[in-house]
Structure formats: structure tokens, C-alpha cells
Length: 349
Image (cartoon, rainbow, N blue to C red; front, top):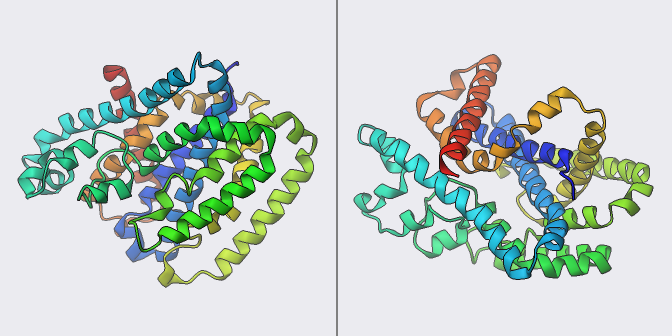
């Protein structure tokens, strides 16, 4: 199968959304502009992660078809997720460890120094592999944000389920999607108060991944109804946006809660953004070609962006910046993140 250029656009879009969201999660924005803080952070992150999951699902059927065997499919996907993750961890640790000798904040950030802070070695090991919040807490590590995102671990579990999901997506797409939403809701609400973060459980995030698979497997059939689907998705998305914003309360901290309720936002948004990116690709605009050129570094950029943003946050009081200053700092973070990702890719792989 030839390379799908617009999927690269989706990949970059998801990476930028995650960077954008985590930038506005910084404490300065929460104190100075709470409404913007919640609207531009957690809610953008929900869509960015959903895009990443759906994009991964979209590519799965072709990957399964190309793989010589199921075992090789699993090995290939495991290496593609874990190798960049571990190498990013080692590269950032090597770069920041000398600085940590002179900075208490960075010293406290690095998992490698966890034993010196009274902890054990589990934080060091967990930092080298994609592990979700719940597994980290199980091992006694409550703060382990150094590299990566919890959804890298979620992707590994979803890849494990991919052949089964692909089977049902081919034969019963609508029934399987509806069933996945029911299972997601049941798993989320059954584990609330029991585990640290039910929203990061892979079984809860199956619908977005499966939706991506369905969009690929049934793309020709869906194109016949594209105008109706675009209009219907737009109306449904707009109605949900109006409802969520109208019922927003500052004390809840989010417009769209991190729960299965947000599928009302993410699934129509995924379809519309996929359709929009595919349409734009037909025009071969230079700006999108240049944007897509960053795709090779986007995965590592998503892995390391938390650290880059945290380092900026240590030195900048965001609440003192005007709108132009906030934009400049965001641009610096994006440039720094992708530059660091390119260096890691160049010297590590």
C-alpha cells in the first residue's frame, strides 16, 4: 500500500495538539486565565490523543495484511513503540543528568536519581518503557512523568487486540463499535475509585482505535455517503459543544470530562478531521508538504514534549506574559521539541 500523505498530517496535528494542550496546563495559565486553561489544555489533549489512537487504528488493517505472520506483526509493533521510547529516555537522561547536579528542580525530575531521593529503582525501570498511570502506581511510583505519554502503553495493548478487533470491524462495523462503547463505559465506571486513572485503561480507549480501523476498512462505502456524514457529524459535534460549554462549571476543571462521555466529541471530530485532511491533501499545498516532513520526528516529539515544556515552565512565569509572549514561548517549545526529536532520531536509530 502506498504511503498515505494525509495520515502524516493527522499525525502532526495530534502531536501539536498534545504539545499545545500541555503548554496550557502550566500553572501560570491556571492562575491567570482559568477558562482558557481548561478549554485549551485538557480538552485539546482529549482530541489530540483520540486522533493519535484513531490514526494508529487506521493503519492497522494494512499492517496486518503486510505482516508475514501474527508473531512478526507483534514484534514489529512492540519494537516501533518501545525502542524510540527507551532511546528518548536514555538521551534525555544523559543530557540533563549533568545539569541536575546544579538544579534541584531537574534533579527531582529525573527518575535516575529516585533512589537518592529516598525512593527505589522502580522509577528508573518504569521510565524506560511505556507504562500507564495505573501500572506505575502499582509499582509504588506516583510521579514518573519524564518521557512519554500514558497512551503509548495503551497503544501496545490495543495492538495486542488488533487482530480480534480487525475481525469484527470487517464483518460487523457498527455493532462492534457500539459494543466497544458499551464495554468502555462499563470498564470506566466499574473501576472508578478503584484504580488511579480509569481513562488511561486500554479497554476504555478501544472505541477510538476501532473507529480508525472501521474508517479504513469501509472507506469506499463511506465515501458514497460523505456529504451526509459530514453534515450529520458537524451538527452532532456542534450540539455537543454547545451542551458541554453551557454546562461548564469552573470548579469541575474541564469542559469535556475524561470519560466515555467525551466520545460524543472525539468520534465526530475524528471523522471530520480525517475527511478534512484527506480533502486538503488533494490540493498538494506546500504548507502541508512541509508540515508532513516533520512526521518522521513526530513520535519522538510526543514522547519528549512533557520534559521540554516542564523545563520551560521552570524558568518562565507564564502569567506575566501577554498574548504575543505566550505565542512566542509556544513556538519556541515546538521548535525545541522537534529539534531535540530530530537529534535523538539521528544519533539513536
